[in-house]
Length: 225
Image (cartoon, rainbow, N blue to C red; front, side, top):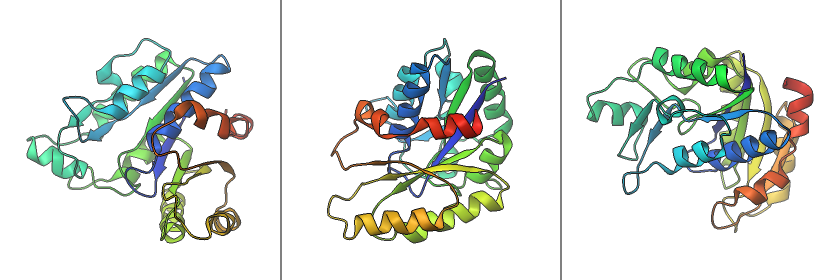
């Protein structure tokens, strides 16, 4: 059975896919069979879901799109609302079955959550319930911008309250004009009870190849694999 990580973030659009793909490529370079998973995606462009395409490309085992992404919705809104609009209810058991199929083929599965950690996925459950069901160590991507300290610390509290391990965090510099960036990173290093895996500079566009070199996956290997 594969091991893996659950990648969440302080918000939507703050680099979870970039980090997830960078991790997949890095572990693949270590000789591991890897698979990415985006259980729920909302927001398509020209009939494609870019997050899913990138995770599929970064996987080095033969998996289906349905296994990587059981639920895909067109409007870029909260998953529970997108599902309601399509007449669907997101079922965690469907996601769990797809995850088990991926785990049977890979040594390591990187699961990327939708939006933030507590985003609703149906009338009763949220992203924390999904993470708890998979029971994977969590990697937190922090979008470094004004307000990120509160967002990161609240998210870390929610992860720990769910009984999950916070394996590490990534500082993603989404705001090139952010004041006191280094001091904010230092404040989170002091307060988050997990290692900083790397700091990704503002690049203006996704650069997974550059991100691979900036993430310390050895910490994860030593502690969780």
